[in-house]
Length: 251
Image (cartoon, rainbow, N blue to C red; front, side, top):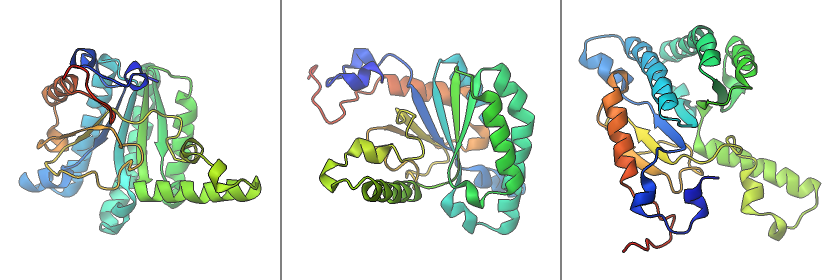
């Protein structure tokens, strides 16, 4: 646990560090492609290149966790051709980037409902997770077929099982025990959420985990998200006072 979470009071001068965990909603691929008279698929392909760069920037800034909202539970409602392309692009990217992840000390974690993902994709996810499991520089969490409602609902079902099997009273079941059943239970909550593309909502992402996360909404479309954008957001984060519901003693 970071020092900022141990302290009940966080001062501005204590904010001069990078976030421990950044989460990103990578939005704007389709709109960028449309504005450039390109197929939507070209926006997604360009977006993959930006992912590679963001991983590099996180490593350079000693950020320990990066969560990327790659495919939501609601995204299954998109045209079948687009969903198929996204799954193919995910598989192709895994195969292409695995060696680079290993060399750069990046551990891959994929969270979400794997039962609906293509079998060959799930198999390769398992392979790359195994290949990178001992890496300790950056943990890259890809959220695929993930939704905050689904995550909490699934944790609730698991909790009910525990209560029944162990014959526990509801009063003996704590918030911490419940949270152990969430998908990212072993990962600290994001310190900073970035959403590109100009929309200002969290779209069913990490609903439990974002309770005290700093939010930053960026107008830049994901395919053209740059290092300047990234650095500007980090600078903004440093200036924020994180009180976690407590008082700021500098006031």
